[in-house]
Length: 270
Image (tube, one colour):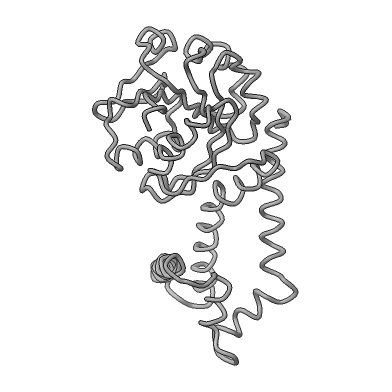
């Protein structure tokens, strides 16, 4: 972790804020972090807050910069960040769809470039974190991995061609799970159950099911088959999901659309 050093978060919105909360929750010292954000109302206690790049440059205490603004803003914001992304600084990016080549072009003086993809469960230290790097010394990879592992479970990806796909699965996935929970409750409500009760039952069920499968020694698919007795109620419902691969086809289409949007963002398509 020493090689990650002091981190300056540029644009501390929903994701950057969740990650910062997770790091602080894990016990890291607030003075390890600083924020550059002209709109943020206030920073957590002990975390420096800068409004302009010149302020952060003058402080000069960061070893890494985490880009947390919208990917479409790189063209307008990138030039103004050159002074704080010099040769001693590693640039870490949350900018969906923007490749290592984009980062190297935007911040050519930086000592390393790292793509980072968590989700909002970083706030409670339960997110996967996908990492891809260019320029890190071999001895720096483990410290960076450990730094992000504090947010949940970090892993290096070696093939950038798969980054948008793992982003669709691990980064965007919570949105799909939330939609599924909501759809279960709405379906039960349409069949006559009180909506508030349906919401509570669906949420508690998913929470328990995910916790159980996380501790299981078998796959989620095997566990599904074990709880679905032949000829029983659960099996009858699963037959609807499984018919002609309906659920898998739907989720394949969902991940494809999400992955392909990453390519569009990289190409600058609105």
